[in-house]
Image (cartoon, helix red, strand yellow):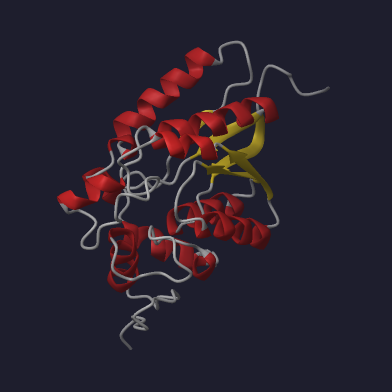
Length: 238
């Protein structure tokens, strides 16, 4: 018998893939589960274009399908965020400092997730996977468990009667170092991933997201495969 057209394909997972450490590990996580992968990257006009290139490289590593949704005009309308407004400098320092509020893109995860949900409904995917984690709760309100719960409710209401995916965020209670360790265990191409918000050719090593990346590998006791401008790469103690 054929599959019920009102039900999603239980093997297809749409992964929201920014190209960063978290989403690269997320793709590896579902690959290890044997899922049929569809990676969705959203171009929302972010200044750090390298993450889109990184997403392409990561997807190619897994041999997964990759779609890039062009919402680049959206970024031009979002004034005041260091990620979309070139008049705002990307702050340096610890990722939990108050200055990191300038890196908030209004409603970003809701936009990215709902683009992925639309694609998932069209593809009859059973899951839309998001890579947010506990460390993001400091600054980003759309990275909390309450957001994921509310999003699942919204998706169910908005797509009633259609093959509706569920939202999963398997790292929501994990630390960044947990994710770095998990990705390393799975053989994820973490060296291909991109974190820096400054939009250069190499990781700056000093912005909040570079700080968090370095800290994650250090706390996990792992070699950091990242090429930083300052030339310092932190390796695990023998």
